[in-house]
Length: 107
Image (tube, rainbow, N blue to C red; front, top):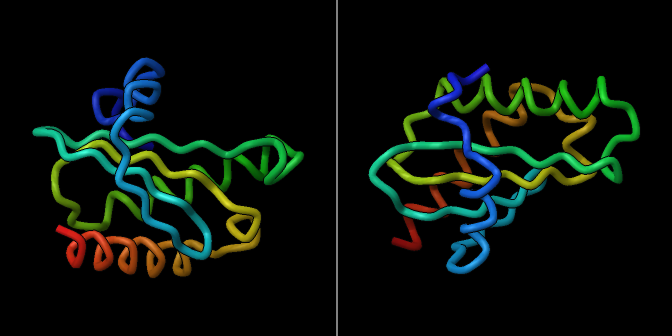
């Protein structure tokens, strides 16, 4: 789990609606805003997985993948898709790397 200081607050997530830069992957949609510090948030709706255990597993797998990646500073909000419920941690790491490459192309 990421430290609390590296997690997005509700008011920060709401502020991200105004000027998002959106990237789509197989397992997650990513909303990014360039900031001086890195903060992360994950939204996994009950439509994605009915069980809270599965929703929390998706979040844990993503947070573990984030800890291993070198990402540029900014606010990152990940929106889980249905396919994320069946994804392994390695698949999520590969997805995160692909999203990072997409961000580098769009600079």
